[in-house]
Length: 361
Image (cartoon, rainbow, N blue to C red; front, top):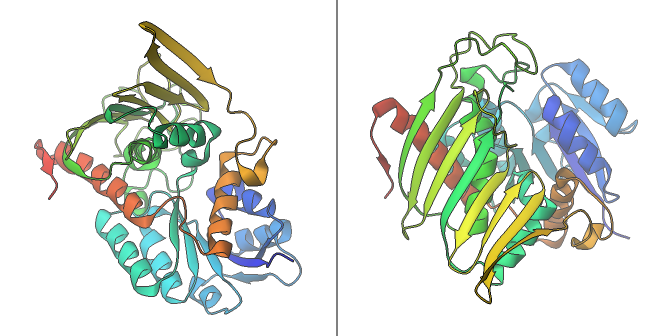
């Protein structure tokens, strides 16, 4: 029999209910045995839907971490709390899946990496766009050398009027920023992952807050959208140490007719190019002196434990993560990779504030 992995959930809010717990519930070798939230009613509701009669409820995450039966912890709290909770969990002997972004600050993300390395526990970050069918295919295509050297890229996470106005999304102290840290983080992570390049040289960035009435047309209404100090949009130029360049664009709210969901990118290589938009993968190349464009069918198959089905990226992410724990292999998202994402995003804010480029050692 396949051994059961016992999981504790810390933070039972939106991302837990809409992504992590439903995905984990699909895995036969996973049992969610503990639920923690500072609002006890949310933890109780999570236990009722995803636990069993023996599952425990906590309001103090440190009490959850003291349970020796829990092998894996999912940290699903506001960004400000990611680092401290994850570090405590690692030192308590747990493997940790932390929701994106890795932390509110790059310094906190670095502390998380150091804790994982010191304890020997696994740490991964919830960048589910790596687990889209399009991304999985694109990664294999690139790893087999068909793209050649990726030297030019665009990563985009554009919403026209879609500023989230619930929870702590508009709270700078809790979240650390707006669309840069919320959705650009996905597109940048995917771009760096596909390029297999984690050595930035410099970043020049600019945030924007220019809409006269950002609440108008917002798909979730006002509820603080018109008064939040967070950026509405941003753009950046990133130069890597090998000379490759990345153009980043992101927005929660922007007067544009070109709307990309997060997790979109375009890579241009020495042999071919590709673009991912939503879950559509397009390849382009030149063959027999003719330009060739193709769209890849990524709707089903291609992932061993879900072959022939149509899983969500969150379900594939959960399955790959638990598989890494069971087989004692590296997770798909490595902590040092996620740290570089945090460092670049922080550099965008710093460059916008100072008006100068931010250089990396």
